[in-house]
Amino acid sequence: MIPDGKRAKGIEDCRYAYQWLLVNNPYHKQECHRIYAAGDSAGGNLTLSLIGWLKHQNIRQVDAAIAICPCIDSTFSYGSLSYNAKTDFLLNPFMGKFHRVPQFLLLIWVAILFRINPRDPQISPIFANLSGLPPILIQASDTEMMVDDSRRYTNKARSQGSDVRLQTWSNMLHVWHLFDLEEADEAYIEISKFIDQCDDELEKAAS
Image (cartoon, rainbow, N blue to C red; front, side):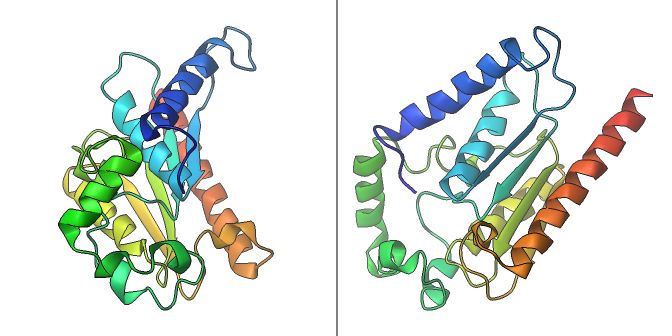
């Protein structure tokens, strides 16, 4: 979950990579027909951080984003951190005792580890203004420790007018998409449907 080096460096790398893509895309200097941003876990965090930054930039925006089991609140102040600790065997070894640590100590630890305020929207997109975002698909398991991140982000973004769709699976491990599971196939089918829907809506808007 933790990138090498300063956390801010990973954020900067994503922004640089996106801007590089705009200049050096596969169509050679032509504008990309479609751009989708996607990531899982910490990558989901970076995806949501990127699109939150992009809406303030005068450059090509992404057409949609997919966040799989994202970490969205780096203050770790959500209920599923506690009530799903016993059912999330993938994250439990790392995060299983977070809910037992006093909140102010946890915030200090995160600030030291990431070298950035844990409430900064760059690493905690839940604290950003979530209006004006592209369509977003979030997938999560209802038994993982970070599922409340996805629920809170979805509810806040919808209340501010953004199109965010949350899909949850029961009794799945964190980022189950990586495993040879029927539920992983189902999740990828839903991602494909989401992209097709976005393509159709963009085509209609352009015609």
